[in-house]
Length: 412
Image (tube, rainbow, N blue to C red; front, side, top):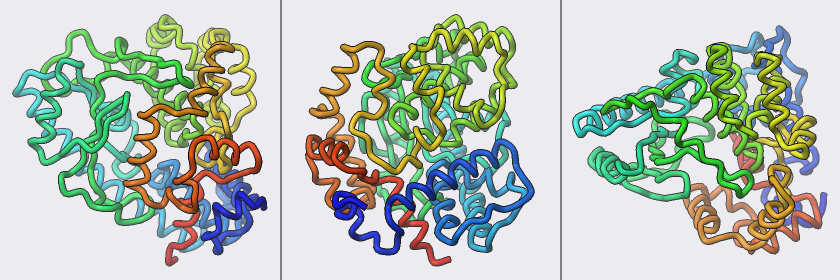
């Protein structure tokens, strides 16, 4: 292990060398991804550390509740109990989130404001998940820009306050927020709302905006669905593309795509193709790598041909671990393959070396709400020193390392 890695992980004495941590993350992630897609009858032959790492993977990828019901084997007692407890916490938390959604929708209806529930809440409404299966970390809402301030006041009237703002959304949390109570999901953790007035992702710094596809033309006051399954799929694919570009993809996102795809009609696929989504093929391709082919071949062929050549070649050989939260090693320029031109790539490199004020503010906020991400000296390093360290030696990313530590430190 390099000196750089040792300095970052100096308080990780309970962990094996970082290359072994990386191997455990890759092995358990890839195995659990295959199990969700095609459950098998026998438990894997893992060491105690690998079983603990598998808990970190299940939590990071938001699939603990799914695994509790889908696996055909039990594994050791601690693993089985962890999944079962997580499923119970997820189910109880879902009830809180859906109750809050109901209250928000009623207030919006009374005030004549159309609003949409996004991603997880919409998938639950579609009946694609049973209670306790899918983690809903936050409640994502979309409203038109002219209604944002009114919806913000509704949220404040329900006991929430704005804690943070990004280019994508405004974050609202309870006025008296409390620290997270456990590793993974806990029913009593704060319920947060992310209020969007547009749907977009930076790929890698080119802002791809699909807001005009999301809102139904006949939107009514109160809660509205996506205008079509094609629109919901487009949002899932764009969100997954953003995850791939920034190495933060989650297994639950692939599962969402695989579950929704059979509900799309030929007209839905045609509608999706008509939007010319150059970013759609990579997340579809990586999903089919685990779940098998589920997209009509002519659709796949057209989406693939619309994907830029460099991106197509790079994503064609990537596995989930390469582009997800299970990827342990920091990269100097993650997602540069998503650049559309040499000029765009150069802009990406420049902004990685000298990040803007918003990026720095996001980092400060993340460190404030999750002190575990500040392990070692990484949180205090300048961007230039971060990149030099990543170029000079393999350095672990704070988030996956933090989750592995938490899983290893769990009492049973």
